[in-house]
Length: 274
Image (tube, rainbow, N blue to C red):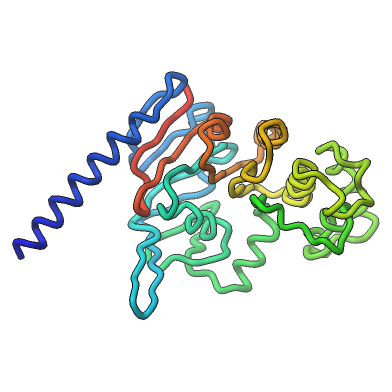
């Protein structure tokens, strides 16, 4: 019993220390707030809540190890927000993104997407909701090498049953929007990293999803191409797309409206743009 109480006191001390560390990361261009169960989108307080997760838990178990990925995590994302999620490796960022993208389900807790409880949807329901509402941008681009730029971007439209003539119009519009139309017949191996990420962004938005989930979108890019991709995401957000981005880059995070900093599967600090 004494050992357990000692351990609990140490955990409390560690968490207080972590909060002090996170606070020290705050730049002068940000205002500091602790996370509460309700967060407000400062640019438009009356915006509807798109994502609301409450007491979310996810544990990965093997025969020898139990890893707590999410520990009673609570957070909200409003429609039209651009939210960055930061924290050290292993803090639960990728697990959170997988659950938000309906690629995985939590062990416990609530996940409301546009007021619909989706925490324990079966795979068919998750896939249906995902393909009509969510776009993904990955660090490693995840383009299919055997398909051209046009064909890679066209794929989500095929999955959702869009007719061929309509697909052509939509793909050309989005390729022009991300300034990669001149590469429409090229293959991914023939493109630079920045160009591949532009194609990945085009594929993510061709279905006009309500939400884009970006996992280290500039992680494999130089600073110039990285800035171009972040500017592109910013423009999409300004046009109404909600974005949740996982990143280790303080520079990239400053493009967002709000930064949620995670530690040990919990959101411990929030930074809101001044």
